[in-house]
Length: 70
Image (cartoon, rainbow, N blue to C red; front, side, top):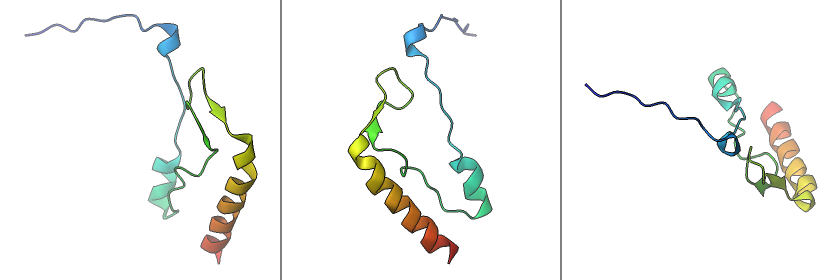
């Protein structure tokens, strides 16, 4: 039988976040994963968005929602 060793996780390694797609997919709503802000480093200290991509991404999301509710 092996034993499990418990180690402290350094504070810098801690990340967070949540994804509601696992809840909405069960309702028949299409998954919207990947339609958030364009950037990198999700939930990390170096997380960032590309501001120039915010308006085009918002327009895309609005068009997809409009198409889905027709």
